[in-house]
Image (cartoon, rainbow, N blue to C red):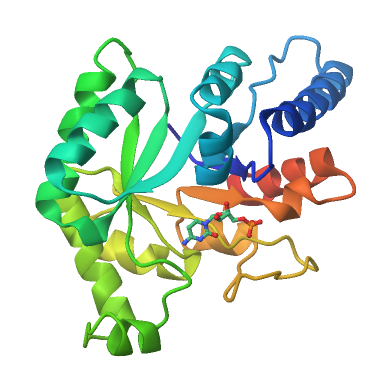
Length: 250
Ligand code: C5P
């Protein structure tokens, strides 16, 4: 997998999700066909979160895979190692391309997650990527100190959790694009940084605290950007998606 833009499909139902993607795919095919008849259009990489997965079940993954999309299943597993291993085995069998756990579950849990995922995905030639959430962007230093009793600077905790993920054999972490360069310096350039909190210039930040444009995320060395509302709520989603790709990948 190379650098890519992942569309966060935070829709309430499978129907709404498929309607949005079918519209995007139809327009994209037409745009590319006009430019060059020989170019085949790859379908966008998409992210499915807890809300949609719990509402629709695994059928949503099958539908998206059948339509040619790569799927990042963002369920952020966090439980005892044995439970996470068995659950990951189930998710691996769905044919997901990327899935995640909370690094806060510890190294043994992350190792178990990897084992389970690889068992589940045994029949797929291309193995899914397993990444870890370091600290949620909703957890700030005050929450960490006062509620979780973690008495270290947030950036040191993020770095240590990324190192733990690497030690457990994971492929990378979900992090802010602001942290991507430092995580690459600490964990190596081949350790993936998957970065939400992306906005096209001029878009509203919404509930995100620290945002970055696709071009700035590229300059920070992010491997994947996760973009939701800047694409899904745009008046012209195809143009927004193409702009994200052009700015991020070139
Ligand atoms: O609409 P927006 O671009 O803000 O969506 C970002 C997506 O990335 C959402 O699906 C959100 O849940 C997810 N995400 C995030 N911050 C994290 C982890 C995931 O924004 N730390």
